[in-house]
Length: 483
Image (cartoon, rainbow, N blue to C red):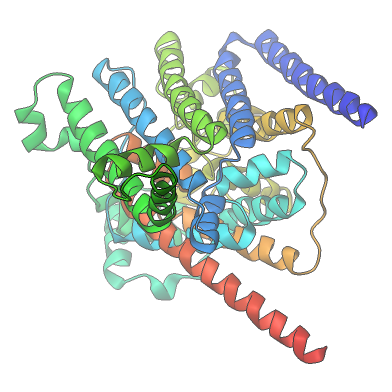
């Protein structure tokens, strides 16, 4: 046991040291790479916190629906509330990089697909990355073949043309005829979806709604519109609902037993329910504290990225790549995927596309890579380095806690990992994000479309849990029959 602890400690320091060395090498090549280095270390911080707090949206849904345990769901809501206040502060000082997303029913549907996928694979987008850091190869299958390869294929094929309404196709064709997007970049079903539908959908941010913007002066519109109305009140209501359905009965019964034992009247009231909700929130200090820290770090990440943009006078890392001569990395708009905050899935899609191009598949002939996000080499991809940072940060934390264990998938886990990963990859694209980018970041930033995605994601998770229950019961019945 002592040798194992020493070995794990060695690897934790070695991984950290290698990342420090990589950072120094980047900076020695060009000071512009400090922009990329920032992504590495925020990813590293996210990975450590995710692993320590066991933060995973799939686990939260599975624990809640299958076992009635709200610990993880509560932690996520706590993180969301803290992050919303920080987002509002940053927006009020013009130091935010957040931007709302197109609002529509597509977000709900995409969340549903993603929710099923994350339960089948055993981890959401962020959860899969930190579990890779723990040595879980089922999560690797989900991330590599689903979020990377599957997602890249999804945006570059015509398999879904039959699902594209003629109105979308005509709308996309009209945009091409007007000069944008370029005709040679509109070749897939997803291109038709983007140009023919998504680009025409409104973006909604509560602080920008005229009624709120005109009624609330100065910074108050961010704190009331974005934080209070969009994030804090809904999150508190959800905590109350979770308590009422999953915790109240047990807590009140326990309280009555304590009163009876003390010889008092077995009567409870509103104050006991408030105490019960607080008890639920503080039941797992590890998860709750990490929720607070994740919210704070996610806000700090936005602040630092905005600072980087101001320092270099750019709005995107693609501008710096162009200055360094790496013009092949950027899109026709001169940009690469550079969200400016915590985000997952788009960079994994870029990595998958880069791999497919090595096998001769042209991945530049579409809007997603060719026009919007570019296709940089992996070592010059800031958002991808953030994902690698999550894996390495989780690995360091798992090593320090002696929780690292390399586990190869067997039997059904291979199928679930692959299928779940593909559904996550495909479910992230129509909504332009995953559990982090389409839900967590958006809700905290005042974009109500995040709740649409979250509703779909929870609904999909519920379906996934019910499917697993059915599958397990069916399998056990067959085994008992054979016995």
